[in-house]
Image 1: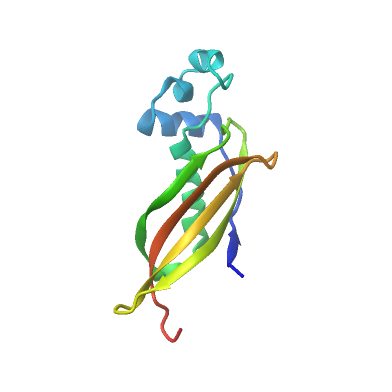
Image 2: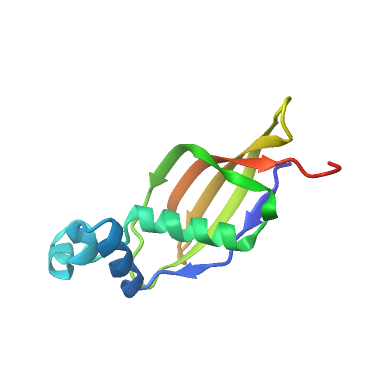
Length: 139
């Protein structure tokens, strides 16, 4: 059975959306209310990269891998399936789907799957990525 971790929920405010978008993804659907209201989502939505960053921040804060983390190696897939709106609360589950110990070094690769849902249990994002971890002493 795979290990699964539940992260602390995070609520995304309009202020959060504007701050992130103005710095990192200043598309009108993220920063211009009048423009966004005329668009397909009927209002401002969070950048998908904001959603990814917010959830990743919760993962790191949780400290499940402690000081073993040596860095990410990449994402194999990333899908934004529904918009994240001001006031949405995100709930994420992270599942270890594969581990690959190194034969020559005291490290291994861990493949993770993130499932992110809003307060209405709608899946807003799924992603698979891998991180490199130091092997634990004695196991």
